[in-house]
Length: 112
Image (cartoon, helix red, strand yellow):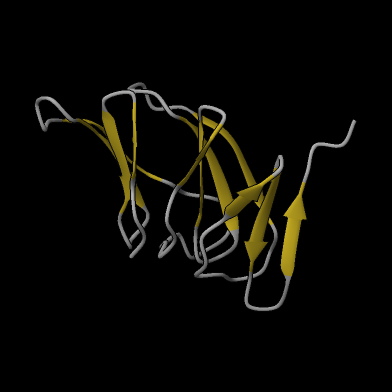
């Protein structure tokens, strides 16, 4: 399974069966725990989370990418799907996100 992230006193992680959680680092208590359910059938995830610009990006094995606010209050900002299965983690470089699926290499950018 993938690695979680630490951000502003909280640890964020996703289990291999698609349940994301946030834990308070001082107390060790779970702040929230939610199943990430996208439009595709397979919600399991083997990917590491990616933190960028205060947002957490995490794909599931169906190729749905969830954008969560890196906050102790659970909030899904977006769910996007490429429609191709993946077990890979996202990568970021120079304002672009890269995603490798079983068939393709995707690059997402915000062009002016």
